[in-house]
Length: 356
Image (cartoon, rainbow, N blue to C red):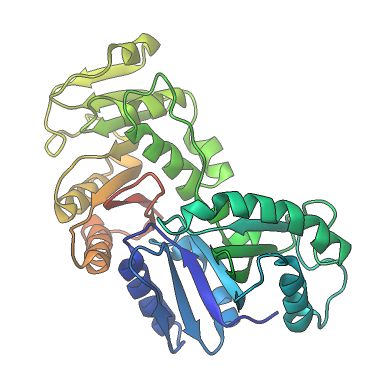
């Protein structure tokens, strides 16, 4: 099943960063092509001669500014709103019917860009998905039950008469439509920044890593902790935490008996003995943060870390590459580094790092 482009959802306003990232990574893999997007659209398309091969060679986990990665199969324009299902089925018959043995797709997601133009299409996406799903099953394209081993079929609505068909593999894509996890703000969370760390733990760690690295008895520090959103998340996983900040924390955090608050500078403090975790969401120049995180890893003060890099208004892809390269170079050892602009991030990216 071939495609003509990569299609990636992203945060509106960060299309240039994703376009630059895709172009650079595709060129490094030997694929000549070009990105196509509009600022504020919430997506980028990368067109090249062998998009299917590029999709296989460029793992979703390696992308920083993409929320979701699809292989674009077809673009349908000028669809009659009275019959959107017919053109979808006809297109699948044309482009995907060869070598098909049984259902080609294990799940259907009907989506729209997370943009000012795309959000009004959410109601249509729901209703169209409800109508399209049984039609696909009847035609033999969609399995009767969800099959996680089969590719997903994505229908991305760009307008009432304009849609894209795409494909993703569950093991090489975000597990949520549009790449957006639907997390609820907990009443006990000291700040909305808690959602960033909760999402980071879902996105940057796999299930086995979460089980091994987030459990009772482990130790951690939160640099720049006040009012305590990230500390609260780690306490919820059973860790013993040291919160570093000259500002106050929410009083209920101390009810666990596993929290120590030190009024100190997060850029100067260091632990007396190695910790399992260090987390950091300080508002500071990204290079300075990267250098301090590298020192923690170089000196062995923590076994792993999650931190945010607040990006400048211009040349954000260049700054991202520079900071991640600086992190590994100054750590003085090979690192496992995973970075992503999360849904709950703003002008920043979130990074997980640990020595290999």
